[in-house]
Amino acid sequence: MRRVHLEAAEDHVQRLARESDPLGAVKELIWNALDADATRVDVVLHRSPLGAVERVTVHDDGTGMAPEALAAAFDRIGGSWKKWTSGTLLKQRTLHGSNGQGRLRAYALGDHIRWTTVADGGGGRSRTEVSAHAATRNDFLIGDSRPTTDPTGTLVEAWGKQSPRLDRLPLRANHRRLTTELAPYLTAYPEVTVVYDGTPVDPGTSIRRTAVYPLAFGAETAQLKVIEWSAAVDRELHLCDQHGIPVGSVDAGIRAPGFDFTAYVLWHAMADNVGDVHLGDAHDSQVTALVAVAREQLRAHFRSRADDRRRELVEGWRAEGSYPYDGAPAGEPARVERETFDLVATTVHRHLPGRGNQRRGTLRLLCEVLRSQPDRVADLLDDIFKLSDDERGQLDQALRRTAAPRVIRAATTVADRLGVIAALRRLALDERAEDPAALRALLADESWVFGERHGLLAGDRTLDGLLVRHAEVEVLLALARREHEGRQNLVVVAAPTVGLKELARVTAYADAIAGDGGLRGRRVDWDVWLVGSEVDSEARLEARHPDRPPGCVQDRVEGGNRVRVWARSWSEVVHECADRVRFYQDSMADPS
Image (spheres, rainbow, N blue to C red):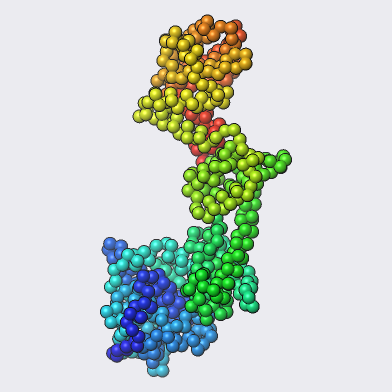
């Protein structure tokens, strides 16, 4: 056994280890394996009984490290053999690193490090172990080489470090990060397999679309490769050499709602400008200019893709019958409304229910909200769907440019009514919420609950005075509206249940108040509602008549006055409101 001392300051070695980035260390060890012509690399995360990551191993079937080359591999920083060749030694595959620093990254994974390597050297095939410890990180112990017939390759083991960062290595997001970084390489060399924590890194299973664009900046040329994924990934712009090997990465820097992607800039001089990469966007350099050109091309790509996706989504909704418009738009306002709807609906499409009545109802509701409150549609959708920053930004930008607020503003406020329905459910249907005063206060301002024709009714002292003289029942709500030739009165009576006995009592009450002389000389329309938690079978039969609307048990005209008596359950009232306001309410019971 011999000791090799790394000629470098210990704090410099510690900085190169970048111990705060264990995933970066895993990446470096994978690249080292691939640069050694490995066709399979296995990364195993060994867990303690409590689930903590206590050991990380990276095993490959590459060429290994020959005994005569080990001292040179561990006694200096830099001077990598990769600088003097254009490809891997056997297969001539593209090389990743050439700085001679990758092995130091292993200290991010453990305090104890061991390399066990099998390689063919001048004396035949042999196995050699190299070990190191973080306490003396500049010293490497190289064991005696022993002959072996085992396959070539290298096993790197790291253990003895407790860190929350290590415990995050099994996260699915880290598998996705490896996938996006290795995608160009694994696509170029399909014979290579990388397995991370038991799951193959296989970009082919999640690549949805690939596009390649030429780039020009100054006198230089480069290439932009865009990969769209079927799963969520970090949006990054990888800065690569001409073969797609990453040198660094920056944020993608664009908005593209609904798209998960990774971009790769390929430039022959990227490795020579690696320092500029890490200085960032603010540095005035060729890399900065290249990144700016790449981002502009990315924006153009996703503008085109957004148009494509919008058309695809709308055609799909048409085919399944979910699209809330039929035929061609009639006139300019209808065209603007429809274009705005398409933009809004496709921006939030990932939040819509699946196929069937739920999506159909939600799209119809979205159409109504857009018509009624175009100025607030972005806020409402953000409240409902919790939009991402990208989605909200695109929505705001599009709505600022559109003429929709001028041409599609409607009289109703759908969102407010949805709140009323929710409150009505709580107050009228929840047996625990027995609060007649709160229910009365709610309905006094929302008389549309009993039909749109009652929407403009209000309290009336004349009606209140008349009802005082008829105290046979307890009135929940009494509202009126004066009209040119008469008036409209709405009286709501609440009961625990609605049966024949209650019907007879309320019908007699309706006849009494309609026959009162207090409103004589005017044409009066009376609607008297009897509402309870349930309507029994006998009363329901009375409320079903072919000559009357559903729920109407009496509809008579006497002396120019019309008197209608209704029997409904609270659940029916709520359902009918929701059917008018929230178009998808009736589909909740049918998710097909």
